[in-house]
Image 1: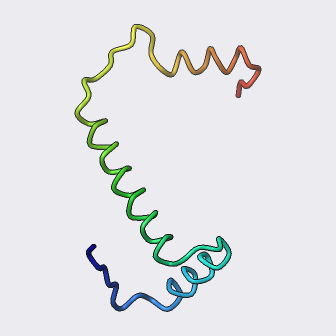
Image 2 (image 1 turned 90 degrees about the horizontal axis):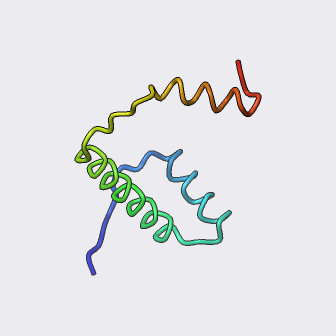
Length: 76
């Protein structure tokens, strides 16, 4: 398994990271791994989204949103 080292981590970020890990009852390793995984998954999702063909709607999206909001009494 590979190692990852972060140098020159700003002190305030280091304190926040330690506090967050403590509050979550988790290790810093687990917090960082989850953050890296989330970022990679988000990036992959954005790439897939950009590869999709543009969807053409018969009704403009804003008009559909306004109609739905009106039906729910959320105008305005």
